[in-house]
Image 1 (cartoon, rainbow, N blue to C red):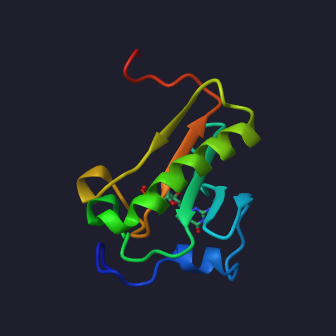
Image 2 (image 1 turned 90 degrees about the vertical axis):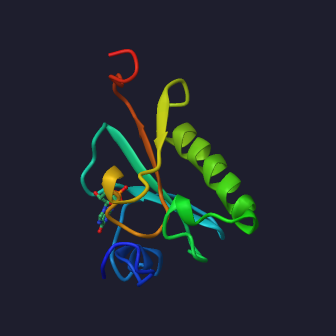
Length: 120
Ligand code: 5GP
């Protein structure tokens, strides 16, 4: 599937567990699992179970407000579970110039090391 096409992504198969993942947190609305190519000691992806048009943040509409807020709350739950509540980063890559590779909205929760921007 080409970028931004709205076609199914690998995350659909992770949600249905056709593809295994290391799940950190799951409820009826979101799934959080370890990134297969971690960029920090803790690197967890948080995704909505129902994409509902949210291939990327730039597609957000007012009706997505509830799930967008809940994704941030879930990022906090992940940070708490991973023991990094005192310092962590939440990243959303939007579009090709930001190197987004999977077109199902996801938050990266990164921690367990010193981040180098903006202070570095
Ligand atoms: P993006 O670059 O789109 O913001 O991030 C997509 C992330 O998904 C990447 O960090 C990549 O490592 C991760 N990823 C891609 N395929 C898989 C997979 O099959 N399993 C897991 N756990 N992570 C994946």
